[in-house]
Image 1 (cartoon, rainbow over the protein chains, first blue to last red):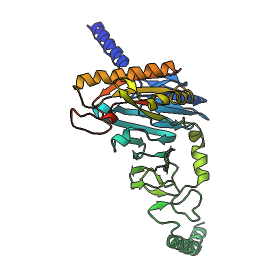
Image 2 (cartoon, one colour):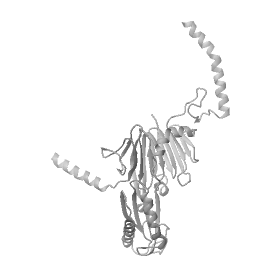
Image 3 (cartoon, chains in turn red, yellow):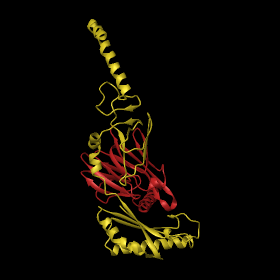
Image 4 (spheres, chains in turn blue, red):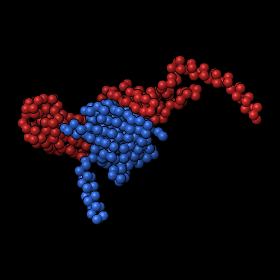
Length: 144
Length: 222
């Protein structure tokens, strides 16, 4: 019985992964950077895919640049931990959402299409609060 | 020992009074107002040191300035002017360029090339207008200038015909443009071809409306 349950689980998991297209890609890496998706941590390289739920990290003296499907551009300085919690960019279905979190480190953010199509759809969480973004560029630093 | 301590307490009243005076003066000058932080290291008396976690608003690459709203446990601060900053607990903050460079130099240097978007129009059916066809080499060049470029080609229609027909027409338009881009030498990390049919109008119209502006293919190069 247990074996059956495990097989069913794997089947569903496999489907979920195959159905989900990347929401963004890594564009540059300097030093050590990682992308963790579905519990699997891989060294980030130019072209690495990012999915909803991905955890992005940079090490000491490292940096990484990424671009999302809606043309939101981000770059991270050293010792950064950033997660994409929620991402939806489906203009024909009017679905827009970008919820992320900067746990620590530094971020340079340039707005994409989501917040132009739906103001209030973009938030960046921090350990002490939340930032709402409307069509701009900003710098954000979280130091513990 | 006890005597020495009490003596210290006595003599301490004078510097304390002096310090209070300095704080009052600075408050008058606006240097140490209670509802915002001053720059790190710029506080001459024991007022609250500026926090190390903060946000700074910058203009977008196209020159426009939007808005960032910071909500923290000390309040809510809206930033609407380039250069304005706030601590993450929600108070206004002054940060100089040197500090910004020190804190963000590495991240700013890693910012990828900003994406570009093209809108192509059609002469008829799935045939591009002459002006749009002439844009194809520029689109390929923009793609070539980017590392691991991702390209999305999205077909759109106006509201003439049925929704189902327009989904297909949008896809045919997108496929045709993708084919032309490949012929011109487009190479991409990922190429997405999709149709929004009549569900994403550039110019809103009622159903069954002829509108050439809505018959288009949008290309995102990023």
